[in-house]
Length: 357
Image (cartoon, rainbow, N blue to C red; front, side, top):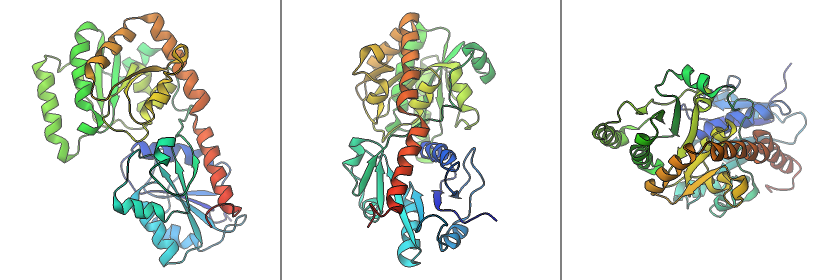
């Protein structure tokens, strides 16, 4: 008979977001050596989750090898249920929260976070905005899923997209994500790169529908409607091949908490061109020019981004070195196994009574 879980990992968002991706990757490592269960909505590549009611019921039972259960949460609704379960229902649980935001939270999230037993920040900067930080642990990438193409051209052909390769931008279509900056950079660059196709992979919420329409009009006016493509949200199963068929990931958000997609691209051997936000400067490794994985531009500077994109893609030797550096950097510093190991240390410290008192 299977024993009750000792670790409950929540996922209440039906969409597969960056948070979902890191939750799934870490969960699949932890399930190999912890009695862990997912709670809420299904995640790609993970076992079927428990319902919230089932998780609450099972949390009354003390796990076999530990003094209490741990709930690991990553979003406001997940914190709310965990706090209600611990403080109102009086479940014998401890709550861990992962925070990536690099800005002051609004009042409600600040209160929720203050009630956590332990907080993991994804960067030194993120740690400045939350209490109870016990570990600074960057997100990692599943290097088994994301790996370089054996043949880039074949991978691109599988996508069914035009051109010989992609220049890709991934994320929600909205001003904060800098989708407009990517479009402007592509309008400037694509005429000089006749074999490239620019890909915008993501959806626009209703409130951003007019923003997307303006971008489509701008692209049409530039005569590039067949070369700058909105392909919608890419399913998790299809993302690795799309990256393998591309040659460059461009991420120009005006704000980013951490940003996982550049790491996924780097794991596929893609250099990055990114704005100076989130954890992107560390990803690009620009402090070590001989080991750099990409280029960093100022927030809002699509012109410099365009120049860097063209320079990199028109210099095969430089591109090859950046590509090798990207793979080396992510493999050494940002594997999901490294992230999972650091998180499990936090769990163990809670179970040992070293923190969370």
